[in-house]
Amino acid sequence: MSDTTPEAAPSPAPTPGGEVDPALLEILVCPVTKGPLRYDRARGELVSDSARLAYPIRDGIPIMLPDEARQLD
Amino acid sequence: MSTPPSDPMRVFDRHLHRLRRDRAAATVGQVAPVLEVAAERLLDRLDDLTRRFTRALDIGGRGVVAPLLRARGIPFVVSMDLSARMAALSGMPALAGDEEWLPFAPESFDLVVASLSLHWVNDLPGALVQIRRALRPDGLFLASLPGLGTLQELREALASAETELRGGLSPRISPFPELRDLAGLLQRAGFALPVADGEALPLAYRTPMALFRDLRAAGEGNAVLARDARIPPRALLPMAAGRLAEEGGAVPVTLRLLMMTGWAPHESQSKPARPGSANARLADALGTEERSAGEKPGGG
Image (spheres, rainbow over the protein chains, first blue to last red):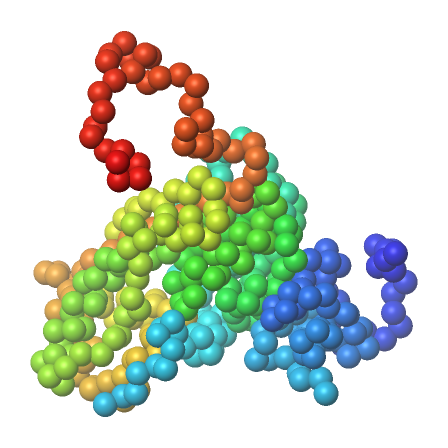
């Protein structure tokens, strides 16, 4: 089941980090573990639970660099 | 004496190179004509194929490659660069990513293009394996790199000037691979039907300083880890420049493009037959008598 239908309701507040192309989100994985990512829309981050890292999104561009990611504790 | 990098696999300072690319995002338009010619030479190979591609990854295309791919009718083109600013020049979708840490699920693309962008990668074999995995079976990988001989004129001019000024040498131009290394690299990375060939792209600059400015504008400043961290002697560039220029002041510069083509393996591709699987004798087909070459397997 996916909740990312193309006609997803526009969110009232702009997403932090900007909107990421849904087709790009579908193929991104964590560069360190190659595990799946979780899109944290509220923070504008792509979260890798397996690596305990959160990759930032800036102006709709995911920053998939391990040394730019936020460490999760 | 400077300390050598601890890991012999690490030749380049990736962080510094990222900063260079970030800064160059504002100036790379100045060198777009050179990048476009190089990209067109590479993408010529696409035009020779009847295959159509639908999902492409552009690695380090600096705003030049993605539009050319879209112009060829490829509907989904993702651009990746070490620098987010540089990636943004290509239009969306774009991401910041490292060739040594590719962030894509297996079989995400049917085409990967890296035009003049893999020469700052430390672990090229590792990057190639990751690229192959990001390709669907029968997907195509196309790449060009500056090869050995590129900027040779500049390398020699800098070396002779520096030897004279300092009595020693430090690496000021990136080491470039040789053509014969590349097909082997592709094969080791698991690509089928690997091909590597070279083309020379002769350029002429009006002045040596224009060449230095272009290299900087493209984000191609020295990021070799073993580089001399001291500020170069003030006389180095002018002296090297003096040695570069020919009569009339023009500066010949060679860009030796190495092109790599490889396919993600697929059962439809032609493969060599297994040894011993033949069911007819070569000697019969040739109508000659079979003669032993005197070599027997197993040391017989």
